[in-house]
Image 1 (cartoon, rainbow, N blue to C red):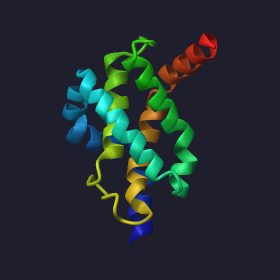
Image 2: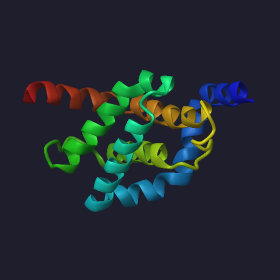
Image 3: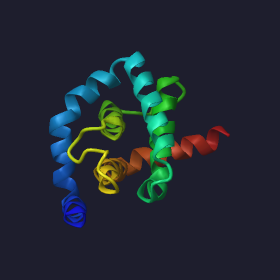
Image 4: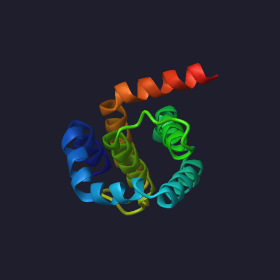
Length: 143
């Protein structure tokens, strides 16, 4: 059961991401357009990442998740403005899905509960690769 669910998600990442967008995009856009809601989401996601940081799948994806956090924080703090509304919406969508305890595969299910969350974040990370490269270059040059 667990392996079948994990394989189904991994094999159909684009279709899975499309379902997530259809279900949660409107809420993600509302959060993205409100600084207080965005700040609250960043806080919740940070707390959750700390709570689940020892799960092997999370450990493997941590660097990508942290880039998403840094990019949203830099946007929130008005330090980095190279974020389009599409990029912002997708970044918020990824973190929103990550913090929701009951999503397509509820997080309380051992091992696979976070596979769908990480699949969404990784698919978004891949689709925003150019934007993320620009952001990480901006980070390097600001130091």
